[in-house]
Length: 250
Length: 250
DNA sequence: GAATAAATATCGGTC
DNA sequence: GACCGATGTTTATTC
Image 1 (cartoon, rainbow over the protein chains, first blue to last red):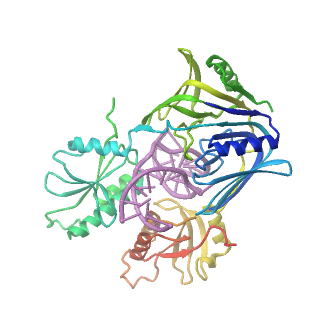
Image 2: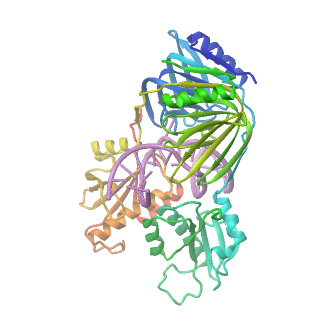
Image 3: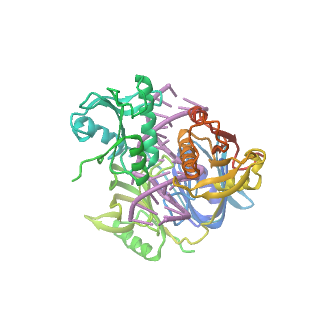
């Protein structure tokens, strides 16, 4: 493990080290006083200040200040980093295409530069996602409702694949939409599109007042909880909400 | 400007410096070999590997690998960082409440530690946002359509505030929904909710076949472009699309 | 490449 | 604190 670390380097020293680090595919961090400008989907300018610039070998670039989880400016992976000294000052430019975007960092002072090789150790084991919720329901369909019978996951429809498709105790088709956390109105809209698509596919009238219909396509939203507005929209459309967490409570 | 930088420190040396840096409110970066575990809204585990840990004085914590714009693990601002040496190894724990979440980083090797004071220089001047699009339309309403007359922005309704409310050449109420970029069907749903709310408020029948109505609430979606499915839903509901960028083309 | 939906989304404003 | 909507959202997956 060879970590390079320069303290208060000159701009030229920083450039030499940067070019070597690009060559090695190192993860690079530069802390210094700089201005930042971005142009692409939007455009932004950031005046002089102390920031941390992170340059990744996959092309990602991040400019961090002392606040926030989000970088104040960035460039996504796949971008190309270049460095140069202009008028005695280090300048780092990261560009990408489609969309065409450019991030430019101009340093007036370089306090610290580090470069370090990083490989592997990237495989995160994450649980508690929507997929865990689906697994949970397939293993215990009664958590949705008694005698619910899942038939298919990712069932295709003209509105896209529905999370879970099944049949209830009375033989009605049921569209289940899964959300791992509290949801707003948009999730109800998503569910409504699937239900509408399935009704059309099965030739079932949308009019719920039509009590003659022996078969009704039902919509069920499975989520830990719903917002008030989402609850209204669920009620409007005659859908059900099942309160369920992606993983069992302790 | 005092930047502290330790190269291959002992775990105890790193701890001392960390505690001082917490005290000073420094921006801290630690590069080293570590494992990471997270528990909260979801849960995850990350095996041993070289990573960069960024600790911000506002409580944000970021674990970065050599890939991706996103940190592989993180903690949002407002969290509390603590450090300790257990069994000779540095351990950094960041916790927050509501929701209760904990991020734990256990180091086996510390390659590099830096701490630097950062203040100010955080005010980003961003243009090309939805607000720019609204400004543009208010200055040139004809970009929406000839003789369109904006009356109100953020006009309240039972479905929430609508972006722009106005009147067309024939005196019809117009609800304008703004999007800074290409949109999908959800934006049409959002517009539909506002239109429905306004129709109810004004006591206007939704049935468009009712040609007797002298006043019709119209819906206009202003966005650079729309997806095919969004276009279908716009047509279904009789809404219009105006192709417009948040900032003028060069 | 376009479209669609998930995410430990984050972030800001409002009530 | 809950809720709602924007974001240069990013990211993954599918078509």
